[in-house]
Image 1 (cartoon, rainbow, N blue to C red):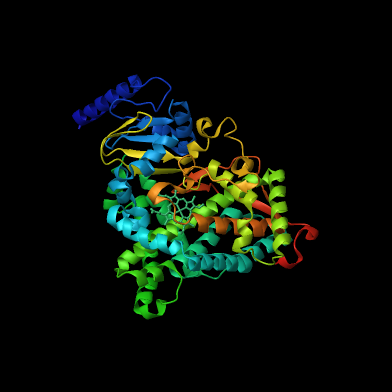
Image 2: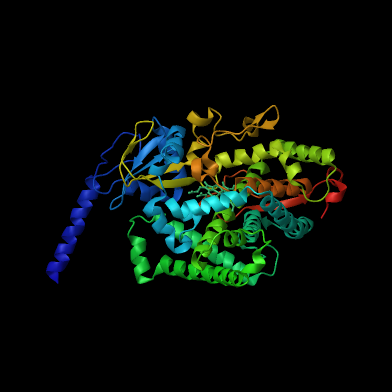
Length: 505
Ligand code: HEM
């Protein structure tokens, strides 16, 4: 026993000496500090809680805004905020940069082989069906109608009541519930009634879905890649919670899919994606479940994240709020529209489009996205990448790069998106908020319809002020960029003279 204690103390002492005298292999300030054997791990552990800002600073200091990242017992990787590199990986050499095994393994339990978590043929077949359906007018109308109903019957009445009672509201929570109801209608025509409804089963489904998303993405932040696998094997800690939440999600989705398959002949006119997939091809219930879950994940927290940051930013920018309100009033008087905004009216709102886009430039809902390198390659800026390395493009950092947006990159300025008053699109490689190339986001148009519809309807009726409008909120990093603790706001009904008489709730 004494010998054991002695050996143990000797080992501790040796480790102490090793770490105390350790010097990074790379001592200059460019790139991540890289130590022998343990790679970037010490820096990563020190900065994990502020991952986005730390990596942004490192990339800003690198000559081509690209840095190599290494972790012990795991493959190396490259993180880039360079538009040429982004174009190379997302388009020019698309085949060489799939999601890859590492990404897919991390999310497999939750997402199976859904579009968000597959490559090659499995991805292609879902992409083909979905991109056809997303381009149909019937799906667009379905989306507009779903958003309108949720707005008129749930969100606006909740806001109206809060403004009368001067109650504080967590706007992020409301938007997340809104988006979840919406995307469930789109995915399988089910209304979980998470916003203002009595949907107990729906609320349980949403909360399990949220847990599953956060815990699955937490696997990527594990200091040592095999640690989550050990926890999974022993069914302990976060992995135990993850298993439970995934089971809840699967049971809920399976029951809907089973009943829809049993009444297959009744899906003839249904507009939701599940019915469209059932009509188009023969698929197993498990595959249909994967399809549905991926779509819910893709459309769930993205629009709510963008809208939450949008209202926080606008809280301290009265001049931007005023311009949006003037635009809304102009569109109203031109169309003499009443009630919810129609698709054509939303299309006319160029300034609102620019203000939302500018929000996502600085606070992208998907801040970092990763691919896997299949064969050795050299990026356009000269960075060498080895087979099996991960390559991440850092959308959050790109919005803050002088090399991409110029000297005023840190300023919130919707005007940068306008030319003679009309919205001007940007290269998706400089602005990869919706991804780019063959895997570009399928829900982009739907997302803008939803965000513009909510923003215009809310801003036409209310003034919204974040309680803590002058302090940048902390964010939580899961798959999407969310505000830690939500966004507390106070509402005031706008002067009745400035609101169209027929639009009151
Ligand atoms: C502001 C809102 C949104 C943003 C910023 C956004 C962003 C993105 C990004 C970055 C990706 C690439 C993810 C990856 O492959 O790793 C993506 C993919 C995707 N998005 Fe969106 N998205 C938004 C809203 C939506 C909505 C509302 C839907 C509809 C349900 C949707 C459906 C999809 C789908 C199906 C994919 C997978 C495409 C593929 O792999 O081929 N998105 N989105």
